[in-house]
Amino acid sequence: MKLSFSPSSPFARKVRIVAIELGLIDRIELVAAKVVPGEPNDEYSKINPLKRLPALILDSGEVIVDSYVIVEYLDELAGGKLIPASGASRWRAKSDHSMLQGMLDSMLLCRYEKMVRPQPLQWQAWYDDHWARAWNGMARFERNADTLSGPLDIAQIALVCVLGYADFRFPDCGWRKAYPKLDAFHEKMLQRPSVKVSVPPPA
Ligand SMILES: N[C@@H](CCC(=O)N[C@@H](CS)C(=O)NCC(=O)O)C(=O)O
Image (cartoon, rainbow, N blue to C red; front, top):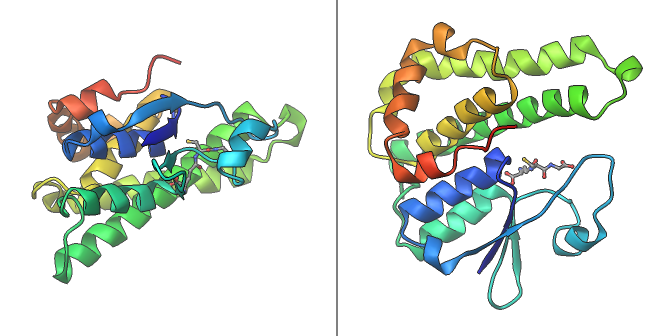
């Protein structure tokens, strides 16, 4: 299998952490791709017309898109370890993951607003609204920190990707001071080789 990824993508990081934790990383060739909003990438668009990373290309040639769907595929391959199979823990993990996914979407929109959109066209209220979604999401996980101490699951992995992305693109946002329980969680997660090896490189 091949994974189209970027070292800076938090969605691709989630898939890489999952692949390492499931013992599948040796079966995956990492292929770097570059996607920039506003710039075409005809080669990658043939793999994923949405032009979003990551994408998993199976040996059959079939392409799986969206990080969560890739995670589901890998988890099934490994016998179901990171997404609880049934009951309350399943729906909590999936719902938490969806929330974290939305937080990442908002953080990326903030990043694109400042990085890609020409300065005179930038819309501060829209930026603030999306940043508040990510920030309030962090507050929600700080309040529910007890759910972070259970066995490793996809929500915990997505949360570490959110916090790592905050460090990477919003280094002055002050999340550690505002959310000490998330800070402790992040430090603990960094002890895992999968989390450590996938920290985004310095910008
Ligand atoms: N829901 C998608 C989101 C993927 C995504 O937005 N990836 C970013 C990179 S971090 C991207 O490819 N952005 C390029 C663009 O949207 O033009 C997933 O979970 O895989």
